[in-house]
Length: 306
Ligand SMILES: [Fe+2]
Image (cartoon, rainbow, N blue to C red; front, top):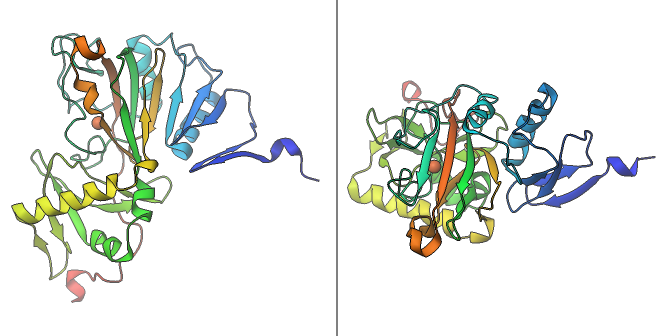
């Protein structure tokens, strides 16, 4: 007979929570991912707890830890290192940043880097050969508005028409800034194998059709613009998929950066008089995988086979 406590308790979208096999913390389903209660990650935690958190980030994609009031900057950096080497070369080191590893984001120039996350849906570090694997956010000053909005990439792929999916599978993305790294638009998540998307809608230089075949062709300005509009449409056509996180005091978020795109709401840049001061500290973890399709594309053949 099945033990009732081992039965699956809750199913919301992607977030399947099986009755706890541990008492480290409790998970509550959110729109994407889960809220985490009953743990203070600012305090020392065991290797087993760290392993469980890493597993849950991969499984649920976003973990929102509430009521975290014991995370000084050095602890934020330390938590980031649970996931790997940190990546801090891509951001401006604001004078008020408490650490070279922490990107300080704000709606006020004197307090942090402004307009961040406002240039379109993206994953962090899409312009690296190995895009950022995880992003960790700590709200430092909470504004009245200024959500961070997340978009689940596998669901976006699943929502494509067959015709559009076939087209997107043929696309590679050339990113700015130089050296203009090229990645497949759709690829396999390195940990889950699920199809996800590598893009920054604000920094894409061009697309390449049918890379590695005799049909290889790079898009010009107009076609690039059209494709970016098409991708944006797919990212926004079903807003019920999105999770808009309204920041509260003590919030600490860890995301699997490769599984969810994100952008900041327009109100994240409203003035201090309108919404109050917004300060967010972000730590990013260097990726360890080049985006790769771990599946065959029957419509494409390698150049040397044509
Ligand atoms: Fe970002």
